[in-house]
Length: 169
Image (cartoon, rainbow, N blue to C red):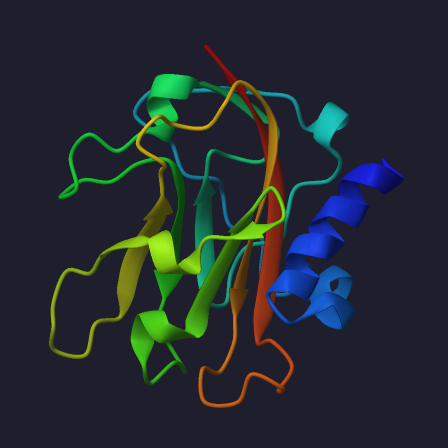
């Protein structure tokens, strides 16, 4: 279990917020998990406690502790991305998507994210996804999403959520 949280901490450090990771992942009210189109198997016992969602990070997919197929981690349709995704709120983030940084398995993937934003005029919510063309390799994966002021990278993160899931062939 310590190894799992060490990976989350490494991802959070990569995002510039290791000191706040454990405290920030508990921010916000509990929100029921999203229902993906293909319902994954969920086993949170093996993966530790589920992250607290709310604030700017509303939902994550694959859900924490779930098992999904490798095909579900690809994005064949850029207009409807899949992979490692989050539904987010832009409240309090004047530069919208620039406030969000993601790491998967301890590697920052922010520059490879795909955004779906319903409007160009003051959007309230959006969806962000990371999906390598070949999908994620089978095995256990960990992801972290941080909300951080892009104009002040030394400032503490507004929110960090970390979660883990399993990919099968």
